[in-house]
Amino acid sequence: MPLFDSRTERTFIFLSGLKMGKSRVMLPVTEVDLAEVKYESAAPHLTGTTLKLFVRLIEMPVIGHLIIWHMKKQNRIDQILNKSVVPETPMYKPEFPPQEPEPSVIALEEDGKPEDRVGLGFKCLKHYDAASCWVDQTNTSFRYWTIRDYAYAYRSKFTTPSMVAERIISVMEEIANNMPPMPMLISFDPEDVRKQAAASTQRFEEGNPISILDGIFMTIKDDIDCLPHPSKGGTTWYHEVRPVKKDAVSVSKLRSCGVVFVGKGNMHELGLGTTGNNSNHGTVRNPHAPERYTGGSSSGPAAIVAAGICSAALGTDAGGSVRIPASLCGVVGLKTTYGRTDMTGSILDVGTVEIIGPIASNVEDVILVYSAILGSSPANRISLKPSPPCLPDLSSSENIDVLASIKLGKYTKWFNDVFSSEISEKCDRVLKVLIEKYGCKTSEVVVPEMKEMLIAHMVSTGSEYLGSHIPHCKDGNGVKLNYDSRTNMAIFQSLTASDYVVAQRMRRRLMYYYTEIFNKVDVIVTPTTGMTAPVIPPDALKFGESDLKVTGNLMRYVISANLLGFPAISVPVGYDKQGLPIGLQFIGRPWAEATILRLAAAVEELNLEPKKKPKIFYDILKKTS
Image 1 (cartoon, rainbow, N blue to C red):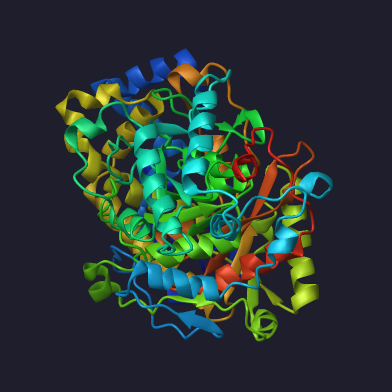
Image 2 (cartoon, one colour):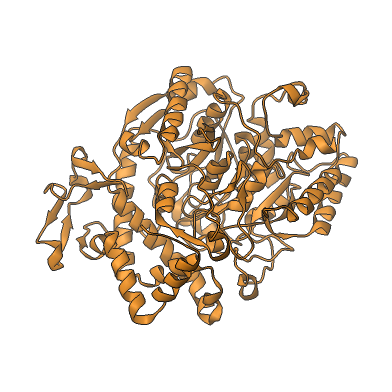
């Protein structure tokens, strides 16, 4: 990760040697010379009984303190948090300057009806050619059924939501008996699914579907409230201390559009991991390679979309938890601007890094779901002053001209810092074709202080998780957590108030750097992850896993959008030699969801590499029509 060279006095001024415990004084952010920034890529790997023993040690009063102190020293956390003088004032949540309007967009009304916004979202899509979509796909390349395919099938009376529901229920019963297990859902109520589907079917029979989302089947991540299901957050007990009383705001908006909710998607426990490992309910396996992880923490939502069972899903993203599994499973994941969607009704609904975002097999379905759920909370409208929400008008003749005007920023050393060069090569190939076909312009940018970014994100996220979860954990539930969750919680509990303040000072510095970059470019482009789906170690299934190298590779490109609140999207761009999906990420200016959605749609339309049918896939619509 990029870090200022400690030998460069213009960057770090050392008052005396760190071995003596003295400080480093960081230059004011406006005086940093970006030409002198040096790139430095950012741990132990513990599984099974080794992890179990490690957790017991770090939870011991004296020994645990020493182990955590050593870990923090080895990762330079102590040096950066406790031996740095940061001149900037703290920024406790993202603060955005006013933004220029995006071109060729359709404006949406936050206070309007979700179904009306979805209707406008439908109008911004390119023409739907039913004939080409419904040809026999036996001799054509694989494609996922889209929301518009289901809508067309319902309106043409090829099938009904009730018929689709029965197929999905049958598939879920089949999956329950699979070996190895494929626990995509934590909570599933067949009768509730039938009841929702029957209501939708009746609306179609009466000629009164609510919206294009009527009868569309979705999964909701287990940390977002969705009646009648409990919200366990991937634990075995969280629903006991936090009962669900009503739908989350985002779920309520989707329900008003006629969406049918299948159940609660599996996840990495409390969102405290990037692989999707969960020894409580079983670890979800990647539909493209069942011996590998889906990525997390929104593992179940990504897998159930990739497997073709649901058209879309909702996940949460505090550190790439929508984008990482979307990338590893070969689907699309949108992280909205912080504050663009209302977090009320999620387990961690009072933080400054997490958002609720959609996962779908394609960009147009992400657009439709996003149209329904967007809308800032009353508090965020006051503090953040969001720009009006917009969608790219993909049907407009101006679309190509707008694409040509978009300026892309690429930090080459960061872009190429991947576990396998196949990832950066595939992403770079797509980027070059995008430039050749549409005329987008690319500029080299420099992103400083990435080690500081990583630590500031860890401190901010960890502090917010503690604030929400530690009161319940101290009631005796903490020992019921998985071992990797307990490792994270122990590290988080070692953080101090001064650590938190320093992290927020760094957040302001980093916001300045990115604001300067966005004064020159519209979008920053990176791979979504630094590696494709990692293998699931057999002994990790029972006790969990803590592999900081894998975590580093998976999170390398995603955390800036969380700490600083920017919108970002992951879109599939191909596969490595093992057939594992690769994702490309666009990070946009604040409130510029329309721009990154436009770019993602353009990448998808290039279709440089045919989609591969996942090894675990269910053709729900074909079986019912």
